[in-house]
Image (cartoon, rainbow, N blue to C red):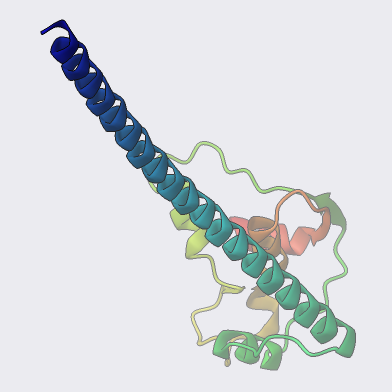
Length: 165
């Protein structure tokens, strides 16, 4: 009987070892599968970053070529109309301006005021195309300051007068 108990103990021990081994093998396979999935995701993200960098480089190259050749973006209708206007020559004193700051305004947000500001202010009661040139104020440089602050630009007294009107 003693011999039979020993044999049964060995058989149970072998079963436990084989179950543990198969469980370890299954866990290792799962870890390997997860690792390969993570590696694949990293590779995909890396490929996306490379593609994004290539697109950015191509866009910058295209813009540099356009700038060098003198070509620019197509003009909007408003830009085309403004170029056709007879704006007065502006010989008033100029100031170096980097940023536009509005204070004391509580009724309308600064963003709304600036968003709705025209490129050319018309102080007359006539249409823009029929207005006398002395009532037109060129505010394009103000738009440049709003869109790209912290770069110094020359702003004339006349432009400031048109902005405040």
